[in-house]
Length: 252
Image 1: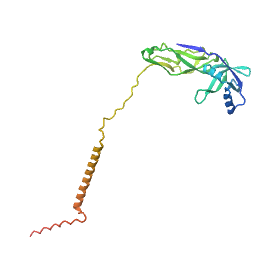
Image 2: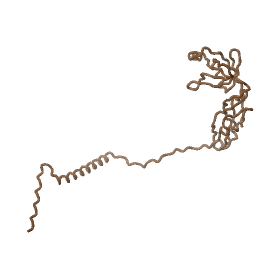
Image 3: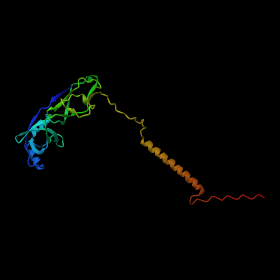
Image 4: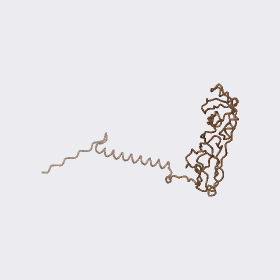
């Protein structure tokens, strides 16, 4: 299921970098070089510069171990950190950690998935959950890549981290039950269409105006009725007063 590729050592030429500062780094990059530092094993940190093209080749090869040649001496180092520009395309700085071949180090090794799962014939797809494994391993046993063969996976098949074969003496740092990849069914996602209200009657401008006029007349009529009722109690100005009602004669 899994094949390992043993890490190969790369060689990188470097020079001691002096002085150290922002302006110097700008001039360095214009000259086709990159800055870096080397530290570890209880020794002093050394600022270095390296040819940019060599750094690109070493880093993009996936190598972890480097034989760094500085001032006529070779140091065995591990690529500890690579910094990129704001576009994450160009390398701007590299940190190297001195190593003791007899002491284990922690590294993250990329995964490479090979083959087509059996479940693909049934409409499944391979879904990867992680892209690398973290190991504690001797420097000389660090693989460049861990190749995971998935041809045997049927529908709903899963590969856990504990199932991946590691270099002799290496220890897995990831949780043992962590899912590395699985074959899942491809489902069509149906769009949820919200219920729309029924068709509304189109608005007719002329009819609306007529309706508004009718409403206005009704309101005016109602207002007039109230006015008449009020006028019965209090006659309008200038109107002749109604004759007074005669008192009924007393009965003898």
